[in-house]
Length: 181
Image 1 (cartoon, rainbow, N blue to C red):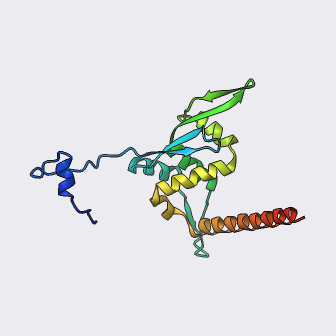
Image 2 (tube, rainbow, N blue to C red):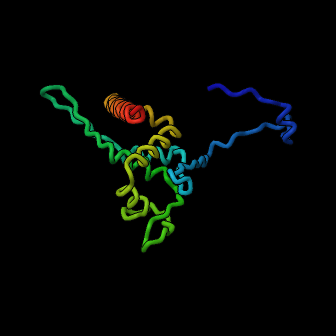
């Protein structure tokens, strides 16, 4: 592991004694980030996982591998929905969200401790593209998760992106044709 160079001048300017050892605190951290929703007013707060969170997430997404003795083939059940929801429920810690109730926008209190929690309710009715964007941000904030994607999952993501690109090209070509009329 490389350690960044120590800046004695900056340390002294900040009142750090150069004769006493300076220790780092490796007993946890709390790195929280904000995922803004498209209206720019509502947001979801998620945290970067610590080792306890990572363990909880991995236990929730544990995949059994079945080995067929006769053929030597292995089977692994992949459930992307369970994986996505486990990731989000592990990392999301708060939000500022509103919903339309009785003709008025009302704040929705955040909860995630039970299957009937407001987070789980939202996940069941949310726009899938918002959930996908939230998942991507959480994965980027937790680089070890990127290594857990299988080649098959990465290939599916590439195929999805290619389809989205093709649709966007067709849409842009259609718009260009309608503008040129």
